[in-house]
Length: 127
Image (cartoon, rainbow, N blue to C red; front, top):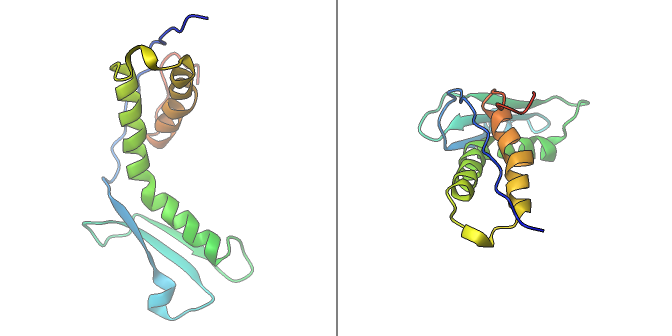
């Protein structure tokens, strides 16, 4: 079956706080061992842009809260990596060796994830 390249879908990006981001354990600073409070901040700035909270009796537990904070803090890097992958695929970095499934992954997973992260809708996607 011959492989065909798909037409890229374009997004109109929103501006967010630029990365990199990091997270810090605020409960350690306050001495509240049972608390689960993590702040996500830009590496170059101490102003929190997001918090992951937990109070006793409510999910997530401390380990899950820290994992959520780490995932949020990694999001600018993950977004940039996804955008670079799509660009390299679209620019033909892989020439004829790229299977059509890679184009499908870009179209069906990476581009919608980027659009979700940037609060945009994909053109021609019907969403």
